[in-house]
Image (cartoon, rainbow, N blue to C red):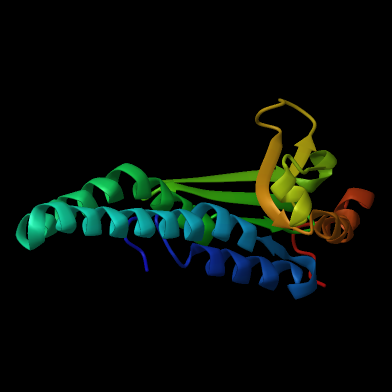
Length: 195
């Protein structure tokens, strides 16, 4: 569904189809946030909000009776949603619409920043200096999640692509090396190459 030009819910599928036609299915890898991200930033916050909201409504009904309790509860629902859960809505958009595509010639990071803003960042594989894995907290270590950082020659901030909450990052890094190896070992590798 396309609401605005930068909020196209089919964009991920269209890009994946395009790159698979260009490079072949085995030479394209798509990365999305792991289920740890889903649980930490979407499901658990929504469960906590639902529990707090239910407890608040029950308390209001108990203290103020049915009529005032339901009115107060309705107002509380609106306040809780807009103050706390609007952040969760952004995380849902991140989970569904943010992705990274790896091809033999480029790394493409797509991040939906809200409804009206999408950022697409591309990095040529010939310019990749290194690929780092960062497991920044105990949750990442326990659930084998990490951040992949693609560093390239050039500017430190513009010359890197960072993608968080990748499941089994060491295995993913090995797969990325296999995909980008033809381009990095053969500078004459061209964009019309099909496997």
